[in-house]
Image 1 (cartoon, rainbow, N blue to C red):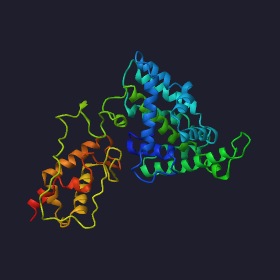
Image 2 (cartoon, rainbow, N blue to C red; image 1 turned 120 degrees about the horizontal axis):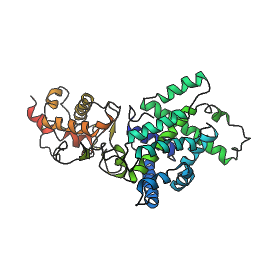
Image 3 (spheres, helix red, strand yellow; image 1 turned 120 degrees about the vertical axis):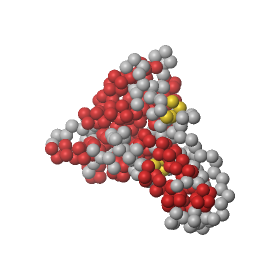
Image 4 (cartoon, one colour; image 1 turned 180 degrees about the vertical axis):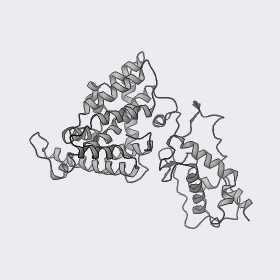
Length: 367
């Protein structure tokens, strides 16, 4: 698992969504219903089971290897059970041992009530994945190295889609009663039977997310960690936490509500003011997460919304509103710098509403 080293937190959620959703594939970056349901289910289970006088100890008991079937059963997700069954019966992944390895590493990290970060959990999962993908041949070792070294978001999502196909076939075989020990794998599943490293890595993402949500629900996740976003707590992903404390006066100041009085630039007839950010939907752009690319993205937004801006890049970039917006977006995405996805802060609901923070200044300074 490489989520702290090139694969965004968002892509990890997309992978979980792909694997656990009732839909065959997640077709866009908008869906997160399964992740929300999983978060709620884990939070509820932990909240009902946790002992307030021994938070760390009882949490570790909840996540203990012997309790796997209990917690997975309590969550009630059909595709989660199918994923574990497929991993064990077709790919021969020792899920219990893998879970135990993660649990033991987390236990050491928590110590006497210490808090942990999502990156520490990622490292624990990655280590467990590597322990349980020991190849028998050099060819398998080379293949495993390629899979475990994947850093492309699209490659990871494609692997998740392929695994979902295997899960669909596995479910069909179960319904036909063809999963006895003596049953032969279908020709389709046979194609996947040697891809243990792929399956173990993706399964690790699901297990890792369950651990993260459980730990965050118990209040043992480092304050400001991006995983806290799932529980609506101060986090680094939406800029509600900065420099060791919740964002307040020291945070990047948000620009005032957008009002525009300029008449120099007309809204393009081809532009539709679609709401891209809401309480249930995140606005995400496929843009490299660095300041230069974000600046260009905002310039492109302006040109997409208004006519007459094609030769005014320098004027746009020179406005105070433009720089404030860029700084806001850069800070909002600081925890995943260098990735290929950029989250737009909730304060900006659409491209026009974002651009309207600085379009009056552009009109005033344009020749």
